[in-house]
Image 1 (cartoon, rainbow, N blue to C red):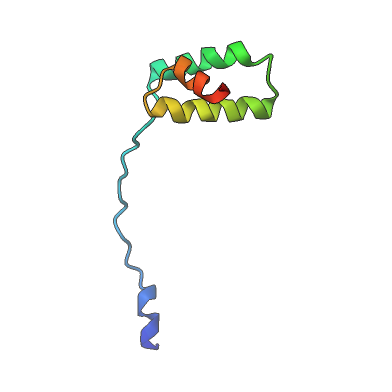
Image 2: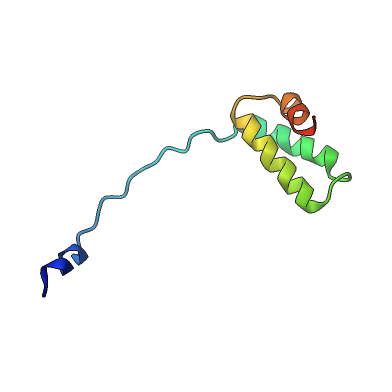
Length: 74
């Protein structure tokens, strides 16, 4: 076998563990759910998803529900 096939050996690297950082707490998840329930009649499903994602980004950064919502709709 040519030497350039040496990289195709069956050596496996140990899996690296990554810490999930920046997730929402259970309290934040509940607050976001109740916030989205209040706005579900005013938005289409695609608008709901977009709004939820924008809210989650801001909440991960430490904003409250009211500040995050005000930042989005301004």
